[in-house]
Image 1 (tube, rainbow, N blue to C red):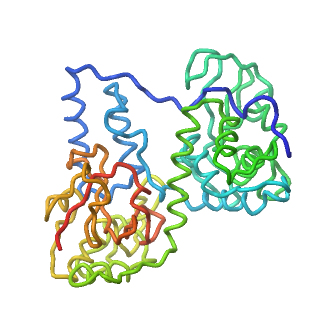
Image 2: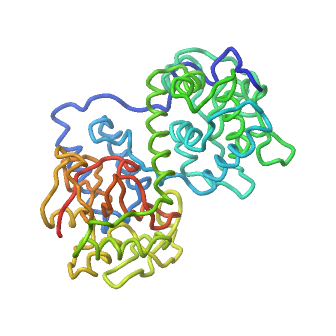
Image 3: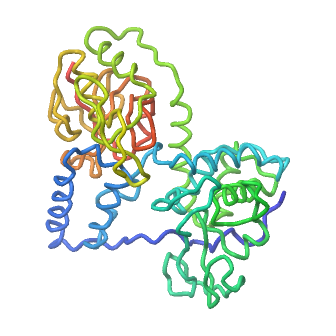
Length: 410
């Protein structure tokens, strides 16, 4: 396991299918009309999670022939990793030296970046306690049709054992291994005596071993990029994965960091102190008011599951923090953007000051599409109630896509 096979982990250039056709001018108004209706239907803006709302918008965008226009290619956040998948990534990092003793520089954000692009962290699937992913994840049939960006025919190698298809070949699992590659590279990450590409722990450890091969040090940027290219021989793929690795790395560094409020006074200090006091409180879809945490709904990777939980969603947290300084805010993130002095995207994040609201939108520049709000604390960080399954915490502003500027109310 110390060297890579000659062939890439999966077909060169193959990536998740994405409709890149440009919308005809005459249909652009219809597209935005539909999107606006969806956004208006999200009664409490940021209570719709990034994954859930983005998914609904993506469906509309694809139906209207365009996805790139509204920025959905990068929709997501550093907080979008389901806890069980994050556990699988960390487990793989902890076990990699038992598989590749010379492995250097392996970190969970590296595996998260790969899995984000390959399967969106097994979005829409259930990950069992033992790591089994159900329903199983299958890629497109590699029959030369061009689906998924690949035009090479791959003959069946596993008789359908892994890809449930004896007449052809397709990638499998949350890390999208080719069946033939899995046969030579598969690992038993959960130590149950089996090697299954449809198991998160097994697949994550196998991906870690594959990336660590050929004597690479993944802490060196050029070698990390080389490893990702070996995984999928596409420069666009490498750039996409590297973007996510950067975001997850920033989030991992900020999540447990201390906040220095020296030099912050008055109402800004009051707001920040109130928000920081809620770190560790659960995300609750619809939770939070001017008086503190309230009972809302929670929690599944795609959004609301119906279970009751006490805590905050993003605009609930901002409403609470600002109320402690005597400022009442509207309940939704988009409505909060209309308060105070608006800090435009073009001004850059350097224009933000501690205590400012910071916004994120599916289409920055169109405030109606704002889906999330946090509170800027300085140093590129914000206090964030990110999504179901997380808690109020510090995140880098860059951890979420679609930066849409800020608002100064203090």
